[in-house]
Image 1 (cartoon, rainbow, N blue to C red):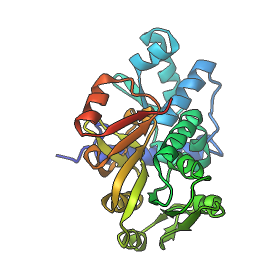
Image 2 (cartoon, one colour; image 1 turned 180 degrees about the horizontal axis):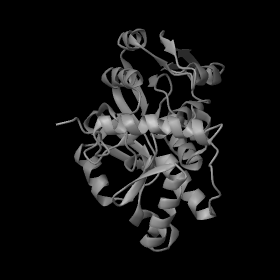
Image 3 (cartoon, rainbow, N blue to C red; image 1 turned 135 degrees about the vertical axis):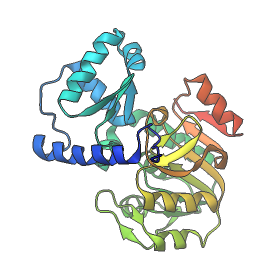
Image 4 (tube, one colour; image 1 turned 90 degrees about the vertical axis):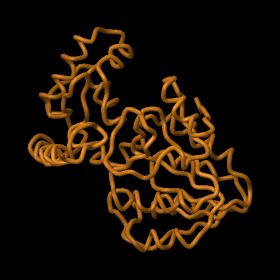
Length: 289
């Protein structure tokens, strides 16, 4: 039996669609933000939501836009014909995966929620603490929110974010060695993992691409996930930084699971079943919005 991805598709299926995505993008657009046909305001908003979460369900969209499931299905079909999403029973997913979205673009999605999450995390970090921070748009907000802290020693696996925080007066910033990813400045590779393993830090602030219904923490990049996993394993207190859309997203690589998390900082936990799953793992939930 082929290995199944977290979205329910086999990995060969996902890889085929990823190749198709690259082909469509080369054919239909000169950059990732272009859409090859005129979309309605609602369709544009739906596409933005799918880009943020990786996927969306018809019933959820119908509730959000106060319209019928039939109307949403037509909108999703339009987006599928524009080669922006792939349909599946009950919803649609971003064609080829959200990993192709530029870091700068992802930073603008759910920006209010990410800002609030970052501020809430900063309030959890005491002076004179040691902190791991992994690459991510939400963890970046947390790093920037530490501006007024004193006596911090921070290890961060991203040269761009490290450069942004290096002049904070009360912070010593370290980065591991390794390969720097050109798209967003993330540092990956065995050297980065080995560097992280040499430390035992008070906190790890960890961002993820997705959280599945079983509480598995997921990412798109295998090497990036290895660095995040090392941070989790070598921190006394793990803070998960993720907005609620991550429960609707999917990604193929496991970082760990909710049982390795001590505090989960999010915007809102609307779903009672997911809240119960998180609390069953003995995780403190902090809603920032």
